[in-house]
Amino acid sequence: MSGSDALDLRGLKCPLPVLRTRRHLRDMATGARLRIETTDPLAVIDIPHFCQEDGHQLLMSQPVEGGHAFLIEKA
Image (cartoon, rainbow, N blue to C red; front, top):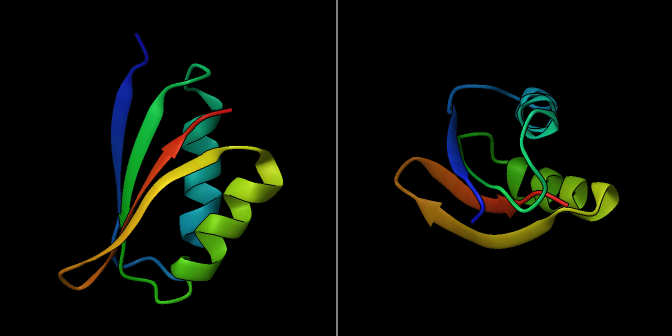
């Protein structure tokens, strides 16, 4: 069974949300899931692009109070 983790990236501006997400995923097992939350308005473009470029699966992208949340499955 895959693990799951969460990362609070609220208050960080581009490119930090993507850089921290990439660093966190590096230490996770294939198939593990990472939920991130960010207030950076560019994250709705940057996070899906990052997932596509690195081969991760974006399982969920939704607005939350004050920002946006994503659920990523590591490739």
